[in-house]
Image (cartoon, rainbow, N blue to C red; front, side):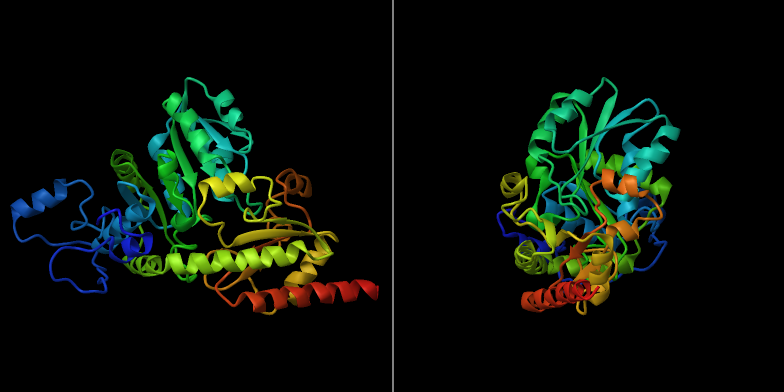
Length: 397
C-alpha cells in the first residue's frame, strides 16, 4: 500500500491481496499443500519462504500477518514465530556463531537475558553487558568480533529508555547489527527502523494481539536479514499456528485505538500515583519527573500502557495492594484490554536473590501495572481504595 496512508489505514489494509477476496481473511489450517502438477510442486518447493508446501516453511495466514507487521514497523519483511522468545532465540541463533561477541544492555526481558547469560557462553559467544543509559558504553564495548547489539526500550518493569538513534549510529560505524525488543512501545508509539535499527522484535502475545488469547512473536527488518533468520527458523521449528496468526492479525487492526486508550489511562494513573503520600516513586516515561522524559518524547509518539510504582512501606505494603484491588487482575503479561498488577519482587523471588533484585532496580515495594482499556476514573478509584485500605491497616497496628 501507499506508505503515505496513516498507520490505522495501513493496519486495516496492509495485508490485502489483489482480486476478489473475503473481507475477513480465512484461516488456512492445512499442514501440507498439494500441487496440481510436478512443475508447480518443484517451483513451490524451491521458492524461498513458500507458504504453500508445508506449514513449517510458511502458511498463507501467517504470511498475511507478516505483511501487516512489516507495514506496521516500516520494514521490508517480517517473520512470525510461535512466541516472542521464539523470535528472539531464532534471531540469536541465525546471526551468531562461536567466537562472536554481543553487546547487550543489562536491562532486558528475562528470557533474552537467560539466553545471553546461560546459553550463549556454551555456544562460544561472548557477551558484554552495559548500562543502556550510557550510550558511550556501547561504543567502548565494541571489539573486532562484535556482531550484534541487543536492546530493549522501554524496559520492563522500570521503563528505562535507550537512545536508539545514537546506538544505531554507533553500530553502523562498526558494521554491527542492531536488534531491539519494542514490545512495550508497540509500532504505534515507536518505530525503531526509522531511527536506524536493523531488527525489531515483538512479543505479539502482548499489545499487538491485545486480548490475552494469542501466543506468538515476530521479528521485522530488512529482507535479507529476515531471509537469513527464516532459514534458521525452519530448523528451529518455532512455528506460529494459523489460528494464533489469524487472531493476532485481527488484534493488529485495532492496535492504534487500544494503544491510544492505554497510554491515556496510564498517564492518568501515573499522575494520580505520583501525588499519593505512600508512593516513593512512579516509573513512567510520560511523566516530566522521569529522568529520560525528553529522550522518550524525542523518539516515541506515545508512552505506552505500562508503568511501575514503588511504595514507601516496602514489600508487605505492595502485597496488600495486590490483594486489595478489585478491577486490576493479579496476572502476568501486559498489553491486553484488562488491567493487570504484579509485584515483581514476589514474582521473581524463585529466580533471583534479594540482592540480585535490588541490583536490577526491583525494590521490594515495586508494583508493575499493565494498564488496559477500562475507564481511567475506575482504575484510579480502585487504586485509591487499595492504598487507603493499607494506610488504614497500618494506622491500627
